[in-house]
Structures are given as structure tokens and as C-alpha cells.
Image 1: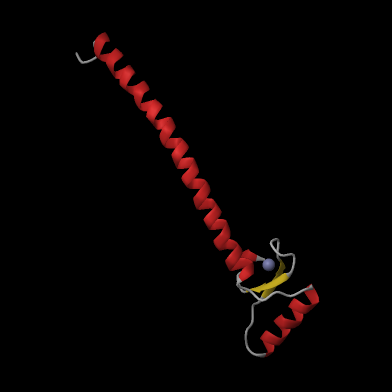
Image 2 (image 1 turned 30 degrees about the horizontal axis):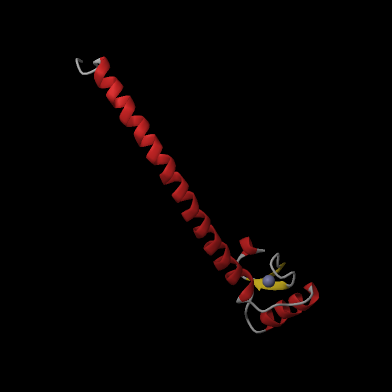
Length: 97
Ligand SMILES: [Zn+2]
């Protein structure tokens, strides 16, 4: 229990503060990296949810396509209004709708 001398504690505090300083830097860089990551993720999401999909102008068009798919054996499709392009897309993933 003899390790908590005042001088050692002050030294610890100084190095702790120095560490905090460099941590700020780290967090700043991490934030930028996160932003870039989020932008890429958002792009990928848009591609998956919109760009790669067939677009229907109206809900009726989308529902007609769902009906045709069902006739050809593809069931469980749903349509959703796309927040990216304002059109309608089909999905088999309920959480996308
Ligand atoms: Zn879209």
C-alpha cells in the first residue's frame, strides 16, 4: 500500500492529462472516419434499397407486379414507397418496407 506517494500521484495525473489531450485528437479522427463510414454505408443502403431495384411509379403498379410474381411462384413480396426516389420498390424483407 506504499505506492500512493503524492509525487507519484502528480506524475500520474500529468500523464493522464497528456493522454486525454491525445485522446481528443483520436476522437476527432475517429469521428471523421465514422462520418466517412456512415456516408459509405448510407450509399450502400441506397443502392440496396433503391438504385438496384426496379422502380414503380405508383403503388398500384407495384402491387400489380407483386400479383404477377405471386402467380409465378414468388410469394411474400411487399412494396414500399422509397424515401430516396419517391417511387415504389418491391422487397421480400419485411423490415425494409
Ligand atoms: Zn428508390
